[in-house]
Length: 224
Image 1 (cartoon, rainbow, N blue to C red):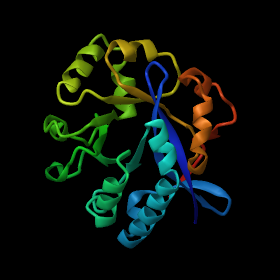
Image 2: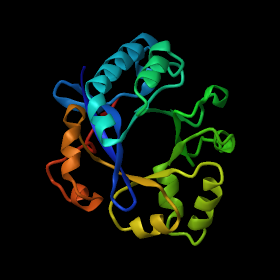
Image 3: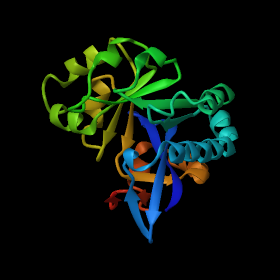
């Protein structure tokens, strides 16, 4: 399989670019596929990590000069790799995103929490107060955002972590998210090639980003 590294932007609710999440797109026989984590062996994940860190290093000056985060999702079994720890020390803009199943005893201030609110997750990692930021599970947001209790839920979560990220489909709920104190949003299916991160500076706001047809659509994939 071939892989391409993509940058999924992270905007504040008011439209300020805060950083990007690095995602790997795999392609097989000309068709983009979503590779489940369990399909790759531990050695393959380490190799992939090496390539991801090399891509981040190539863009390090851009992140530093613009004061932006680079968020790298990592599997629990590679999160303790020395190369990853060294990369965090070398690149102060780098943040590691781990799932709610990760061992919170090993968490440092450079970790962000992913998938809070998923059916198989637990809120226990959140209550440690160790995470700098967290991202809500999209299905949880869809089920609760129109509820009168949504602001209250966000208020409770913010007691433990003030920076909440929400994946959105459109601009419909931006005002609700802002009122609830949500820190940042991501567009669900759009990205730019990671080595072309500088393109993101051309978007003056989240509105111009979401309306730009030149962006990569990552929706139509096969899962293996």
